[in-house]
Length: 171
Image 1 (cartoon, rainbow, N blue to C red):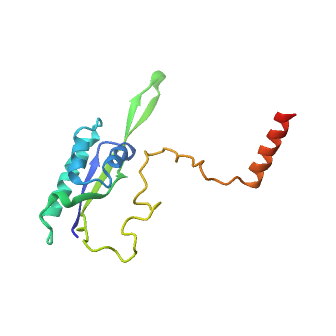
Image 2 (spheres, one colour):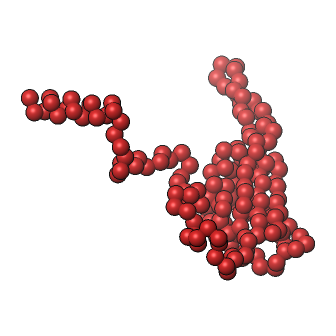
Image 3 (cartoon, rainbow, N blue to C red):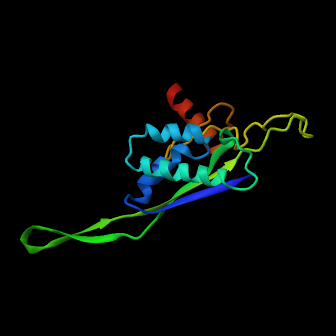
């Protein structure tokens, strides 16, 4: 399995803004990731696209590469904070405001997907286990998990509150 990475340093954006775009491509195959970056409405998407293309080229030049770019996927991508440039902006009455111009180091790592094995695994079911991390759908960054109400047992405190509510309603 071939793994390659590429890094772009001192990109003029904050690491937080770059991280929002990198979250869109993490775990996707490279063709889908390139299409996503092509139509992303963020300026840093062009820089990330360059880094991704460089990582793909690095993987192609490695020994042991299978030759099929469609087998590559984005295994990891992240943005580290680079050095910040401090600038001064004039303010009223002779004062000055500090402006911080941030930079980021963008890293994209691509890997080759393992070839699917034709024999069934010895576990018996032959598929992913229900509730495993791989089968769970991804949710947006910062989104809260959905509350599971079906089949949830009430605690003793919740039962007492429900009983007290019934008494006040019937009285």
